[in-house]
Image 1 (cartoon, rainbow, N blue to C red):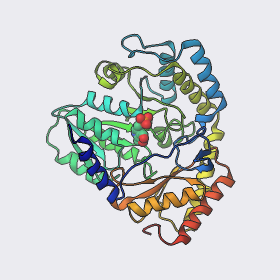
Image 2: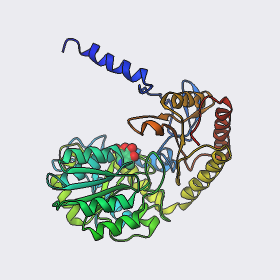
Image 3: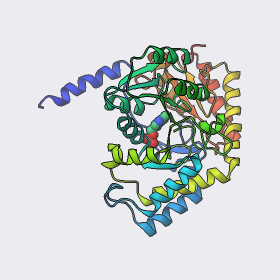
Length: 395
Ligand SMILES: Cc1ncc(COP(=O)(O)O)c(C=O)c1O
């Protein structure tokens, strides 16, 4: 199209006017508790590398060794010639870790959700999704052709009403994040299990942010609540606390065989490279054997939350390592992010469409590798932000 750039340019100008234009900051160093941006070392307060495993020497060593032994890439989907020894080993390890019969890997967590949901439900089925679920869940549901109903965030009464009034769909699928990715609160999983059993619905849990973090052994939201049965599908990622890349779905052997045969994002995409897989295997071993990382993360979370509470910031009911700091509107959010970066803290602003217009925020997240000094510097930057007076929250 001849005028494509001018049409797109106008749309981009509109985003800029509304304070919604997105640009990227470039990091020039390893993903550690501090990183280099524009030649300056700053505290990274926005990474999903919650346990610091992206820069763990044992993980890096395992990846180098695997690349030397198994090469750079797998160069085909699992069902053609991309199914290597390491893929099966990681699937076995993940099933044991999650306490399920079986698991299946996907190249990303996004693809795990889109592929699984669109394989499981279709026309004539109903998907019930928490309002704050991740975009990949919404995209999977839309792609499936099923009816998608969102229920207000964690509102079990409303969910029950929808289930009661719903016409007789063939399948009903309830989906929830375990830890909500932008608000940092935890889903009411025991109640969701009860509701799904009462209404004969399938229950799917997206444990992207809870895997490695929640539960005594880091197994996620089910372990946190002591739930052994009742969650039919546990999705997770290797890209957050496990410090790497890739998604998985854990459940029964039949579920996994079904997904292997039906999920298009599994069937039609190249499998993860061996080095990544080896890094994920090592990361699970570390999570299983080193509870100290988790303890340090929670201690850091407590220190930072207290600092923000003392400053009277609105952290929107966050319960975990993800701590949103609510801002008044989109452009003030970006002003706040700029101010923090100038003061040595990298924590970008989050605006619509990722969050609602009245819920713009600085999304902070803690890592086990942050020191007390890092956290105190971050609190100090927020203190100065408060004193600037131009920004801040709706408390
Ligand atoms: C709740 C949730 N689910 C799924 C995903 C997608 O995972 P990945 O980044 O591994 O594709 C994300 C990533 O942001 C997420 O926050």
